[in-house]
Length: 381
Image (cartoon, rainbow, N blue to C red; front, side, top):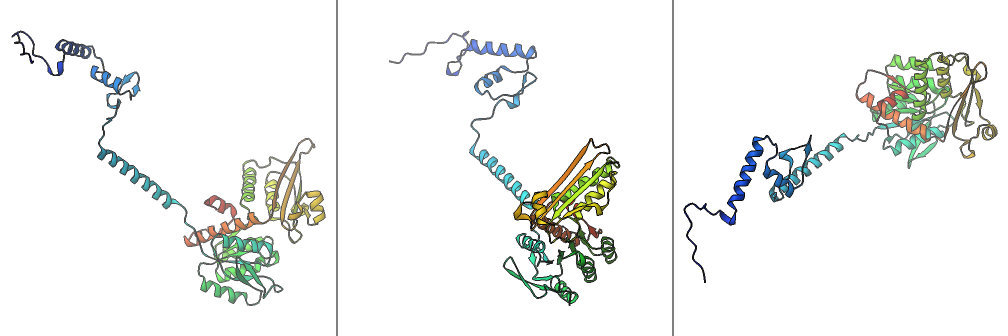
């Protein structure tokens, strides 16, 4: 049985919907007004929301109204838009990284002296780097007519006879060719003059020869070349450090005595160009020493017993030792750098060839470079 609603008194306030208590609503309104009059920064309703959604940011003890919470009922459309935007941003970032990645460089390369172990190592490194090895190489008259296998390719060796016509034909067929020279010290100047006459850029990895004449030949011909007595990148960095020390502290070792020992495989005929470069820095530091005082060791027995060269590397190594002693014999310094094998020089030679190719393609004003220039360029493999 449904009871009739009781009549409402004229002075009785109207009931609010859903059974709201009018006295509670009025009290809430009064509290809100009081807080606003007193300058309270956080409205009462927001405090209620904070309790319901405790994702808040405090800054100097005050709440930031705009950062209290996120809607838990965000529409699916908005979420999809945000996800699409994030994906697009990610794709753009990946594309940007791909665009900035260094592109692989390839060009034709001739390695002269590939009948020797060093030349062959450079030729193999060129193939591994993706360069186009031209199947032509120059060597001595004794090696003329030989065929050397490099990376599954037959490289024909030519002697001194007819070299100019052969190299000119190679340059006609491969206009962007770079030559790397690892022949013998006695052939350095003649080979450089040939390269300059044809106008082909070259990397001179062979030590020895008349270096002043070599540089003058290149300068007069205005041909681009990398000329360095040392092609190992890390060893070159050490040499650069020595040069910087000599520049910054000239005479720092004045009065000191120096002992230098260098050991290479028996097939190396000349004195180490690296040792000469280090000695030049020591001379600037005040040390009195002549390159004729370098102790060269080429005897395998002495290399094993005195120097400590591993037996498996007797046929290919480069050990250098420098010993400094103060005038009163109370202070001594020792420097040593040892290399076993040829890979460090082969890889450095290919980096030099890539560097030179880029300089030629960019029509750089500078013509003669060394391995320090290659190091400073960066982006090496």
